Length: 504
Image 1 (cartoon, rainbow, N blue to C red):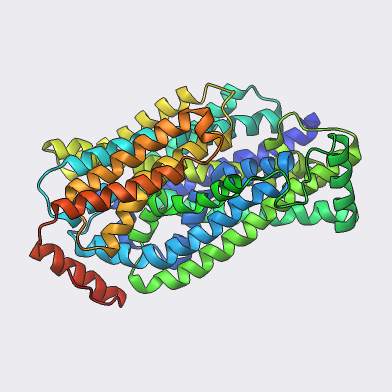
Image 2 (tube, one colour):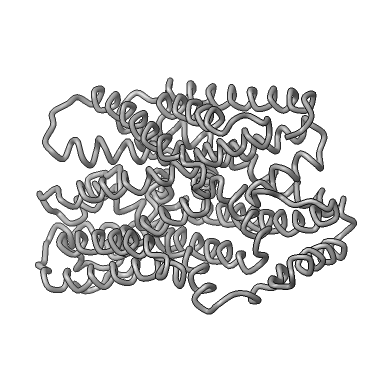
């Protein structure tokens, strides 16, 4: 924690940031008059909004705290995760975004991933929708909890506040503007938050590099820190200390993109298919530069603390502490607010998707009769419910951000990634095939991730994704029956995206 006077300046800046987020939430509230507006903003997102919203929702506290902390602790060998994510995000924007935007509108104007899968399969059985909704709720509780952990740690480092009160402050403010503004509020705040994250992740390493005297001094400092640790690590190497499966596991994080509901829902909310290329360029440019800044923050942090003769108790605090050390209190306050921005942008997006899972995909699937106004109120109640459960889980201060995010990321990637890809590129996908893929993917991740001897060798998304894909294909081939309406909608989607018609 910094000096009292500096803390006061930073506290004022953070309060102003909170006020800005609440104001955006109120603005979105005034523009949200229906349930469809609350869940998908009427499909009105511009390319820049969709791109920044997807990036900010994606990266969260992991980019600002988890990744720099991993680089600080282990070096560039942890950068394989960032490389895999960047490649995966590009593939997602290139091959999923256009088709998903077109297909969800063609197929009964679906507003959630589970409702799209049900409509795409043309089945009256709600099993796909209900199970998908339950999977979303189960893994998002861990994901939202990771954001709350990051928020609690932020207030501990920046202001010396106890972890639990800090975590509850972040939860409270985020829940209020999400309750009010829904998807539009989350997306608009994401634009502000994504911009803050981008600036912070460029400024901190640039100024810290200049303060250290240049790249040569940084590498010398890192080498000295490696030697002081007994020479067991080489933080400047992408391969030293890495195993084959370790690198594969890190790169495999990119597989997760195809199944992240809070990210791919941004594709569905774009104005049109034609916006996808521009959104892709903006989103991947943002991601590549921000990820590079996060990696550099971790490396430069090693050299900085080595020169100071000190070390961090928690490597995930490296961005926070460097920002405080390098900048005037007011500038540092704005940079620290960027960490809150990263945390809150993801939480808000995940809460909206969790809300849609509870109301649209579970509650309504049981045939409950309610007006759209009642559904809007139920959506807001669902946001509050998920927040409370995630906050209770976040009371475990021993949980690390990277572990919580990694488990949830793998769960979504394995459960939804294969079936989303197959739904967009393979006509013969069936309802039993989707059920098999989702269940096998989720169960494999849950079991594999809970057994240290397995998860310590290879990241659970790899067996989860592979087995889910295999299950979906095998079961679909065994149960396929041609459906004229499926064929017609598939061709309509291809016509919108410029795809080539394929035989059934």
